[in-house]
Length: 160
Image (cartoon, rainbow, N blue to C red):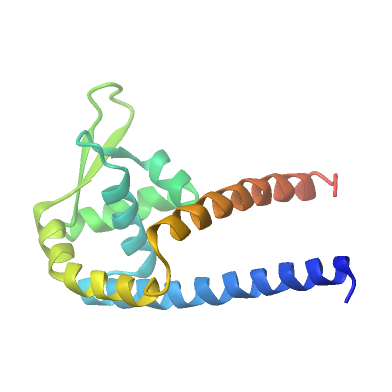
């Protein structure tokens, strides 16, 4: 097989592996969400806030950027999460036009209840991958993600 054909095959295999992983992660996120009585997007919003929060809360824009979704959707869903007492939304001390969001104690307790199951799930998913390999893979994936965004931008403006 020629080198170009081998590269094309490797790229195709990579893309289909990502599609498969994405599908499995979606199912996993749906399961976690169901356990909390929320939707999958709401679960992802909670996880993004948990990840991004450095003790001062997180802006809706930061959550939208992390999840690559529209800020208005984040606003709509975080209002629902606030009603469920899983999220606190307070006015930013830096700029009163913005809200800072953080998980409530209720949300932290519920997520902690799932922590053993989440750890077991991670152990299963990454059982054949050591930390160094995962670090290497994450660096390569970050590079591919960056280049994918660039390619998508080029495609949308007609350069490709």
